[in-house]
Image 1 (tube, helix red, strand yellow):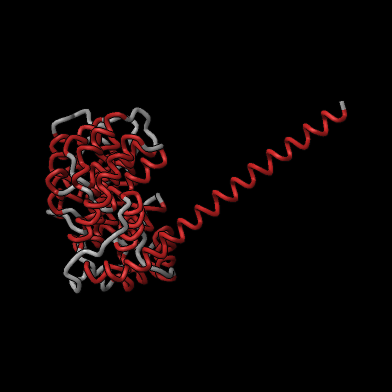
Image 2 (image 1 turned 30 degrees about the horizontal axis):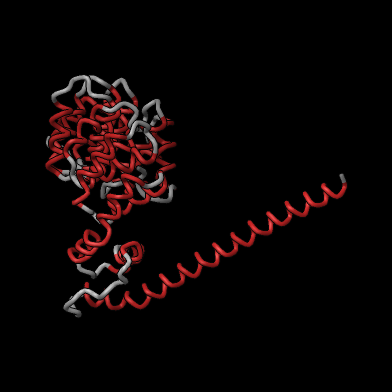
Length: 348
């Protein structure tokens, strides 16, 4: 019995040593392969830079193995697309990506593991592989779970200007406002116009879609959609009006200053606050008196916004000093003193 136990222990120890040896051998081969790839890249990189900058007439030769070509070009192009190589010709970069990587990524989308597919999708977007637009869309149709692969596939389709995802953006449940903004950022003006059409033709459009569209266009100061954003300050929904007012602050303009009149006396403190912010953002001196009146507002945030934006005018500090010294209202005096001694610029 003891002898059997000893042989069992020896056998297990031998198996573990064999496994350890195999792992060491595999790791050594992997490191050797990676070092070989790095050596090839270091040798080829200067040649490809010369080619991409027009100093070399023909493309450098790569190893014959298709897999090795894909690994080398993926690493090199990923580096070339970074900011440190901003002077390289983008057309040639894209041609190289299409030539050496498009087929590889197409195969990966069909047969790769989840991690390999995610990696391929990120590179498809980074290298702007337009030839894979249909592949990316067809792959998206197969995805059932809203995970990172689902989101990255949508990002790819948006970057490649795939129009068939527009109903997904405007109608798919579960997409966050932040993610919708990511997708809008990738769309060109034409597709953004079609998103606007869908919003205007659907009275029941999800609010997160509407919020994303209003907020995104304000942040980007997109002129073609200014009128739509401005008109939303008259929406019957308070939250929509607030999003639109905030976006107008980002635009820094209004088509007609009189549209702000009603907001200075709104029953909602948030609207009074944005009226004050817009006065400063749009430099509307005709509303300085309205701002002075808001210094005595019962809500601190409104008082703060009024004082902060009074200070943006050339005579703003002088006005605040007068209020701090002579105003009868304690709220007004306190917020004026606070703003005069406050360091820093205008808050968001």
